[in-house]
Amino acid sequence: MTENAMYDQASGLRRMTQLTSTKVITVTGGKGGVGKTNVTLNMAISMARQGKRVMVLDADLGLANVDVMLGLRARRNLSHVLAGMCELKDIIVEGPYGVKIVPAASGTQNMAELTTAQHMGLIRAFSTLEEDIDVLLVDTAAGISDMVLSFSRAAQDVVVVVCDEPTSITDAYALIKILSREYDVQRFKIVANMVRSYREGRELFIKLTRVTERFLEANLELVACIPLDDRVRQSVKRQKLVVEAFPRSPAALALGALANKAAMWPVPQSPGGHLEFFVERLLVNSRRPREVPVSE
Image (cartoon, rainbow, N blue to C red; front, top):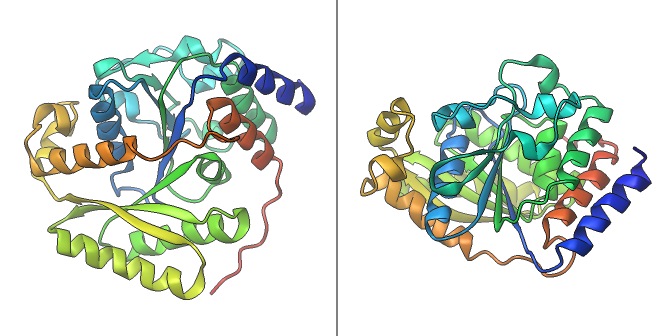
């Protein structure tokens, strides 16, 4: 399919869904192990409990684990879509409270290194999606790959999860710098995860902003401090989410509050306010050449 045809397809979807606004939130972090997937899924479940129609896209295309964390068995995943074996709608599985899950492949090297044609195929798959949803949460891979950048710069809100480790702060800054300088993403919502107190979370945020304010024009907002809570580890072992297994635990309460806050973030009514605009922005950004990062 040509790029013009892909534009036509996405535009056609826009005409069919003019009345359905979809909030698109990308959850990323730069470094692995900071708890992105846990934050994403607990937000999804909490929003679904509020009556929102929620979809989670597992965009970690090489080490997918969203379905595993929920104890779901996905017979097909995005690799089957890209191979032309099925459509995107055929791989969607339903999680707790009706949350729709788009599973990715796990342990598949070629999924972690998509070609330009495969990247475009993924975008084309989304342009055919007709699910009626209120919120699309995108759980990215670790690092600053082209796929991570594509989903981050196409979303309406970028949530960056950091923890109090030097490598986490450094990697989060690197991600923010590339998105800010190369792709004009200027607003980032920061989640301080696994902190021992609100004060520690605030200090972590200050560490990050001290560097970004010096070198970048990006605007950072601290939206949540998620406490270090052993109930999170216990719930993961049970293949449950902490907001389900231990709803009154400190981490569950903080994650629920984050979801409540995120549900109130505005959905643009201009281009960017519908899921098909998200697809079109992915298409445009996938063709944009990467610039050489400016190092500090």
